[in-house]
Amino acid sequence: MNTFSAPKGTFDVIPPRSASWLAVKEALSAPPRASGYAFIETPIFEDTALFVRGVGESTDVVSKEMYTFEDRGGRSLTLRPEGTASVLRAIVEHGLDRGGLPVKVWYAGPNFRYERPQSGRYRQHTQVGVETVGSADPAIDAEVIWLASHAYANLGLSELVLLLNSLGCKECRPRYREALQEFLSTLDLDDATRERAAKNPLRVLDDKRDTVKSQLVDAPLIVDFLCEDCRAHHEQLKQYLSDLDISWVDEPRLVRGLDYYTRTLFEFSHPGLGAQSAIGGGGRYDGLLETLGGKPQPGIGFGLGVDRTLLACEAEGLEVGAATRVDVFVVAMTEGAKTLTVKLLSDLRALQVRTDMEYAGKGLKGAMKSADRSGAKLSVIIGDREVEAGVAEVKNMATGEQQPVSLAELIDYVKGTLK
Ligand code: HAM
Image 1 (cartoon, rainbow, N blue to C red):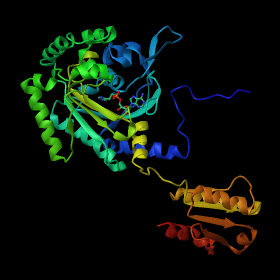
Image 2 (image 1 turned 135 degrees about the vertical axis):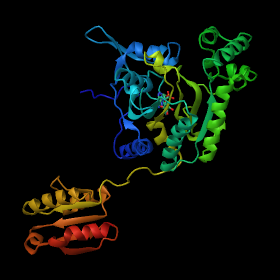
Image 3 (image 1 turned 180 degrees about the vertical axis):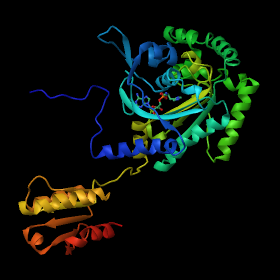
Image 4 (image 1 turned 60 degrees about the vertical axis):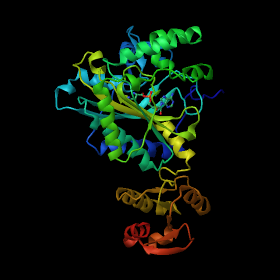
């Protein structure tokens, strides 16, 4: 009979690599959790209109990549392509912005984009994100960037680059948009790009094709159009980053694929990933809460890609997550010894000692192979003779040395040896 495969562009997170994937996810969420950010979980699907309005109709994410369907009640729903719109929808819906500000939340979960699959680009990917709503202080921009760079540093990543830009605000961006549009109108562009230049000219700066890129060398840059407030905000952020020993590269052409950004924009890029080099990114979205029907409130956040961050760790040869499944492997040589091993297994686990036992009913040789494969440092072998004598044989898997230990002292002995 035919078997099934995971849908195109998706992948299973399976052992042994799943241990590293989970460790990356936990490492990325550790800094926000330790910094007073509250956890938030939103549905995986939302009203389609939320993303159209929040992320922007002319973005690739909305116009080309959404998984949209009608449910049995005739509603148009979309699998979330990103987390920010959903989280801000929840903040408005539950009035979280009416309490103490800023609201600071973190989240983790899958997102869905109908993209052309390739290494590092999937149709389902997982992000760890934070959103903060209610503060326009550049110190919170620095905090958000620090949370991400601290997480990457904790994983041991050293080759990544922080790219930084400011996109201005509703005062100064229109002037830049106009100048850019004027410049783009003089170029030799295909119809689709010309249309994009009319609708969303900043997106043209993100075009990866050499034919377009080569014509953009003299394009006007947003830095030259920032108003006094935006310039001051950006300078202050850079000062804070320097104070925090975070280095960055100014990237005046950085635009990201989502329409809600204002002012601070950043992306962490890793050279080991080829075309899909962005392992995480974010920015300010000072108008988004209002766009979604809330009170005008500034905000900033990020989304860090778990799958790409793991690829970056692998590119740097970093070992992430426990290499072994357990520390102790228990083997019952006879049915009679089983009662004792089942109890011992649960006692060790209750004491946080990572323990497993042989369930396949193999002989001693097969059981020791399982012990080896588990990566355990110690195996504990109990047979009828041992039960009678009140001892267990404890084998050090690295040296092969084996010695009897009385059952009464076994747990202390195991804990002492593993220290
Ligand atoms: P984003 O840049 O679209 O931003 O996605 C964040 C990260 O998710 C990317 O840097 C990348 O690592 C990962 N990612 C995105 N698409 C894919 C894909 N197809 N396959 C694998 N990984 C992917 C956002 O989604 C914003 N919501 C971030 C944000 C939060 N901005 C402000 N707050």
